[in-house]
Amino acid sequence: MVSEYERGAVPEGLVTRRQLRDLNLSPGGNRGPAAILRCKWCSYRPQWSCIHPQRGGLFRVDLAKPKRIPTLAQERALDRAMAARQTCPKCKRRYYVCLPLRSLGCCDPCDKGFEPSPDTYMTSPAPTTHRLAA
Image 1: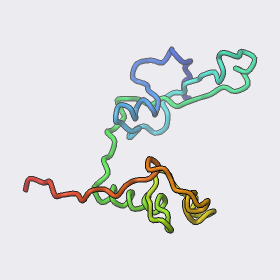
Image 2: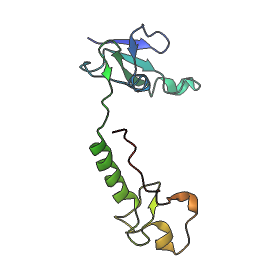
Image 3: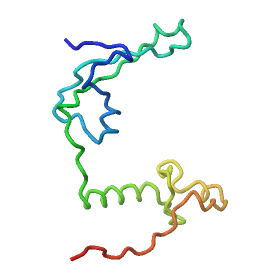
């Protein structure tokens, strides 16, 4: 049975998934949460607090492992995938957000016929040079 703790009464060595992420750790060897953190959904409105309780998993820090670092090839593949979702096929601009390509087929400025503001899309990066010491 997994024990439950109220917020503020959590013993040492147990953290949430978000706290693990801040420590650059992943749950790794944990096979699910070691305990449950119980919070009230709305503490400032007592009439609602019992209706919407929130729970979160607590993981053991001693069983956590360091986050895996993606390889350069994985990062390139992710960047290409994101570029496909963020680039308008009409104007060829790459935006900072994913575009509605399934519904509109292009970016909003192309669809509505106005010029986008320069802070919404990326300018083409300068050519990168090889900086390895070898």
